[in-house]
Length: 477
Image 1 (cartoon, helix red, strand yellow):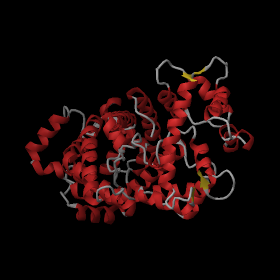
Image 2: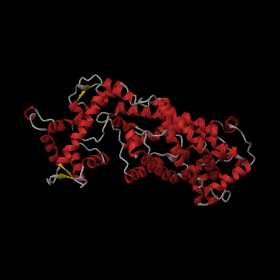
Image 3: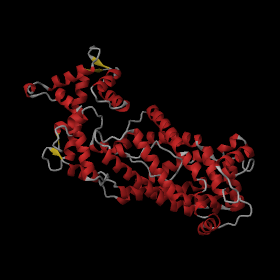
């Protein structure tokens, strides 16, 4: 593909005196498949595909939207040429930001240095693989011509946007509240893209959580009642819930779980931005460690404010038919019989669970990213949707596995008052009791339905997020 572009955009020495429009015109004619003097979105997509430059629908639509100045749904030659010239200027700035020694070439060490400044740590070997995917002449350095050829039709505008392939996706919700918030650029904040992305993610989370609510309620029931003496399994648990309250009871507590998405996301996003400012100097990029600390503290702040809703969700899920008429009735009864302190039962193990969850999640994601770059980044540094979804789901699952015993103890503390004859134990007391009576496996009661909901949750939230993103006009990251 690079050599083909070099032949069209950078003609051989015999044609070096030709004006730039001639090169653009040659490329334009390649895309104008019906020879009517304009290129529509279908021609652009088919033309790029036939030239071996398939970018994906989002990138192609972004090129078309940016280039179509008069908004007539078509690109004429002048619009096409203006887009490529403007894009080249932006790519020139990105090239210069990487070329630290100003020798006109980008080397592996310069990529490592630049990405470290932007908060992404990679090895020199990984940087060489990135270079190799762009390098057309085999010199293991990239000059301006090779850089321009590679990003000629890629609608990224700066080096920070290029490396953002590897960000966690806002659209993925596996029903857990401990994930580290997403990053937003200054442009996204100024343009309002940030709130659209958060809204799209919130709607995706609501649909995903509602779709997997029966598995989530089963998990809570097994955490609270699934001791050795009661022998609750997946089939028996579902049968017991349906027998007690009918099919609708499988969604008991889901309303509270969905309602808390909005305040939790808002507080976490605001707190994350504040903690980042405290931990970094002005103009400094946020590294992995700062992101981990800021994200953990933001999660703790959000959990502190919305934790009463976590307690309500658990009480509603464990409650029997007719015990509570709704969330407000549940809150009123808890306040009347147990006092204000009941709304923070299990708060300490919940807070402690944030550290292993966030730490493992980030560490596994970085490990998977490094593995992919080491072994598969031969033609492109863009891993694609499937790889990103897989890495995000696997890293989050590992985070859940590490923090699960704390989550189980939190849930039991929240529901202790509802279990007849159960002693009101603190965190340490519960750990001792579970290990002495049920052994280590007792700390993982309910983990099977928890894992069962990960794949459908990821798939559903991604599909809904993509549809919401298009509806709200959110540009692809």
